[in-house]
Length: 56
Image (cartoon, rainbow, N blue to C red; front, top):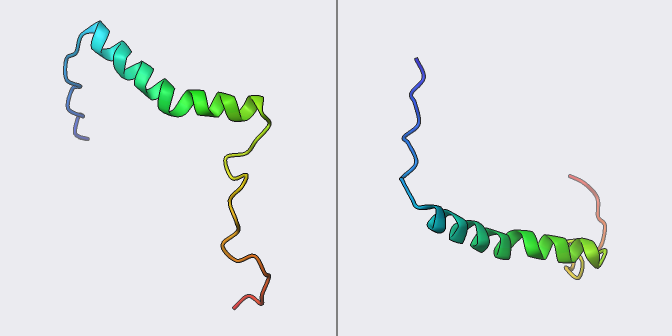
């Protein structure tokens, strides 16, 4: 029989919404801004190997 996961710790509605806002600020808002500007998350990053070479 598979083990059941431990229950999540109890938290208030306010604490849960505060954590949701923190997540949105860190991950969702930057994603939306990139979509509005038509940018990729990789824009402006140089390639690791800019010159092609033979495969080994």
